[in-house]
Image (cartoon, rainbow, N blue to C red; front, side):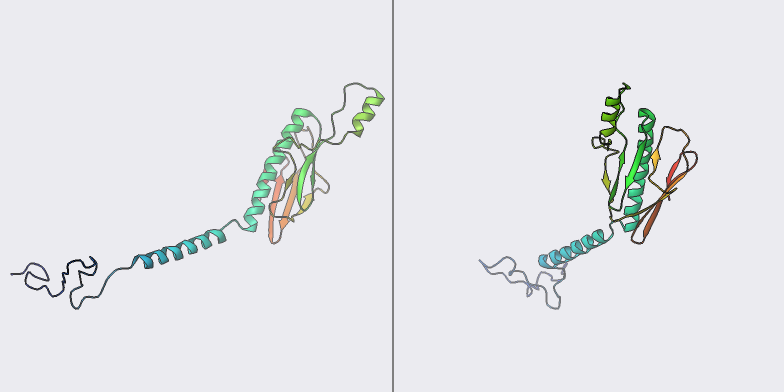
Length: 191
């Protein structure tokens, strides 16, 4: 009694030739189609899946609103750093901006002597623009040009006062818009 589908006596699906290719020596039984995929087919599918995954990853990058929000968050952190620097140093810091970027600046230190020559020389010095300071040095907007609207009007000046007037900085790039707000208590938020 046969145990397998081919049985012991049914060998018509097998061919045995001495010296022939190993893959050619085994034939499928009659009535059975080849099943499975070839290595080439699997590699083609993997390449297609890889290309599709790359396309999705590239398209799902941060949008204009997210990029502008990140710029606003970084600006808020730099506003806080400028305020702390003013409280430590005593010299007011001005935030200077345009549609390509921004920087912080303060006047050069005033010498301790009251000599008119020394005072005149100090007044002629260029302002400190924090080029050596990683937090307060000049920056470009990640998605320039950015329209900047400041309320109250004018360049914001950070002073050593503990209570500052409210400030709103509106950043607009294309259809994206973000607010950096300082309330009357000096707390910052990005909206």
